[in-house]
Amino acid sequence: MARKMPKLPKPPRVAPDRIRSTADLRAFQRLMMQAVTRPLAPGAKSQRCWMDGRKAEEVIGSFAKANDRLSALERIEIYNRMYWFRTLDSLYEDLPGLRAVLGEKKYARLIETYLTEEPSRSFTLRNLPARLEKFIRTHPRLTAPRTALAADMAAFEWAQIECFDGGALPPATPDDLADAPPAKLKLGLQPQIQLLALRYPVDDYAIALKRDALRADASNAVEGAERKKSRRRIKRPAPARTWLAIHRHEGVIYYKRLEAPAYRMLVALREGKSLTRAVAAAGPHVKPEQVQTWFANWMQLGWFCSHKALRSVANVKTSAAG
Image 1 (tube, rainbow, N blue to C red):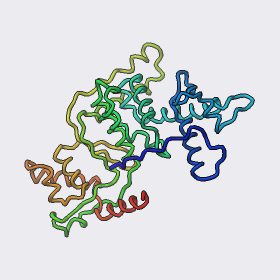
Image 2 (cartoon, rainbow, N blue to C red):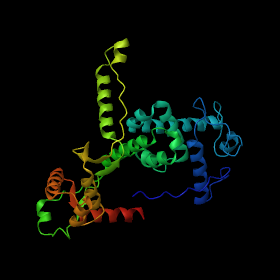
Image 3 (tube, helix red, strand yellow):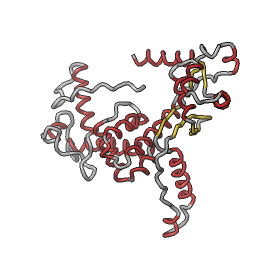
Image 4 (cartoon, rainbow, N blue to C red):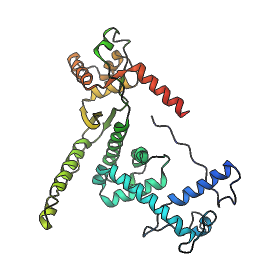
């Protein structure tokens, strides 16, 4: 579960006249960061007014100097534009499904509002979409009438990023399971595996979008009207409860549909429950032969690992974060 990020202190009104302490340095950094990450004005220009109504030139002039070609504000504007262009470009590449769901204009409005209200708190662009699903659900006006579909797609695309970068431990073997009774046996789920319970079949929609993009790439030599006809509008999916496991094999991301009881069983195993309790979590109508089939398939895919090894990795991460 993602930890709640603490709120950052407000930046000072102006930069310290000199850096005499780490507190002065932090104050200067917060002010500089705010100047660089402020939303752009129309025309991709830095805003000329600060948040409190002062002239931005006055605030920025407290830590930047003009030169013979550019004012202090124009110098910082270069970095302001670079930040926004690179950030928007990163999300544009990471969220093709969300763009298709909303359309370009509504998507752009959503992302600019998201980055303004939930600015990056990480050293890497990779983490930019981490809070997007929650933001969509708590700001439905930005994505109406497709909020539920947009939230599912954001969760799906973020899960792929998590899966791609997620860890992998030595898979469990039949010998690892032989001696432990089911009531005591605990199996870890590979860290890279992502489990999703969705209201829409966004996996099928994502695959259709990719196929359409590949067709478009293959038809680049076609000119004029024929080239326009090579692109077809992919119909947005209708609601349908969908359970997915997103997993990685040899560096490639795969989506695997799950039955609802199988999803519940995997979630229980991820939560550290014994095999007996995980099977019970699947539901009373699940037959033993179903569980055997699921389990054999998951073992073949290498989804399971030692619960002890997984717990050791979690402890190391907790210690590093602390």
